[in-house]
Length: 391
Picture 1 (cartoon, one colour):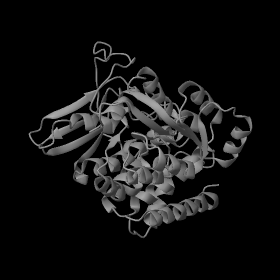
Picture 2 (picture 1 turned 90 degrees about the horizontal axis):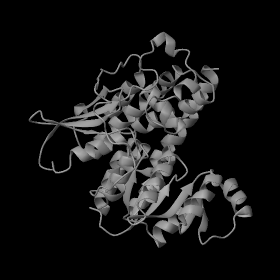
Picture 3 (picture 1 turned 30 degrees about the vertical axis):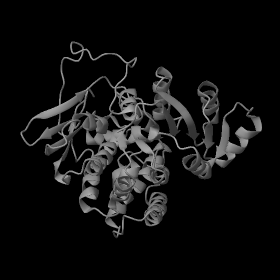
Picture 4 (picture 1 turned 30 degrees about the horizontal axis):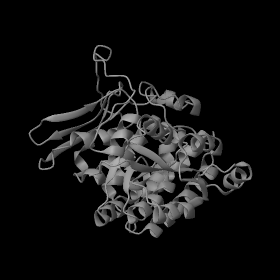
């Protein structure tokens, strides 16, 4: 459990959607939180503005050319500017933050999580790939280091909140809700012609491009199913997904007596972010209050696995175990990037992923270097398939 002192926050991905929302939480509660370290890949323009406002001890730029360009024009402000992974290790080993917010997108967020755990720093986790790719490795390491991993995703935060005080009670089901994305009502034929611009128009949430496409294919929900398995140590068959277009119920837990607890609220990522930063305390937040007269109808649907096969692929990868989830993630990242670059169609995404899963020979999932090799190999194979078969 976190202490009551002011917390120094390190944000991996401070210029992305989660990072910006995290800084807004810090902005609203300067008596509780301080932005100690801000980290970006390439968005140095926004990083400079964040440095000016929040005066962190450190700012880290992962991309070498972005770092070099920034250093040529940056005027000293009391913030030490560091480069890349070595810069992150310096902070983790020499001036440890209280909370490490991992908001990087993709496999790139895995190793930083491992290093933060080894430094015995509490994790506020928004990087799905950390648990999807290396769930066993991460959870074992967290237990060994006696470190909290508090989820930021709205669905997993909802489950976390529903489980508060329920330590001795047996879970019967975890029910993850999904909005259904922008294509919930489209036919399978219509999906053959959707564009990246259409896929990026999420009906309820404002997010980065990769996660927004994952929401459109329901892969995002599939990744969350895998995350839930590792976070909550439940049977694989007890994790269900239900389409809830209003995005008011963020997820639910059913206990063995058939009682169900749900966490509700307006769609605002600052709510789960703030809860993760200062668990179990809650604070005032300038988000609209829930108006049940406005949201007087909440509806639910069964996900269509034929129309959205990515969700089923994630279920199958979880069921198969070992390194199948790592392959699922790598192939998906490459396929989503290709779709955003107009190289493939929306409906090609699951076809490409399934091909990689079918050709995979499972390996040990406990070793980071092995996972890195599988990730690299899968990306190369996926790119080859795209170039040779989908042009």
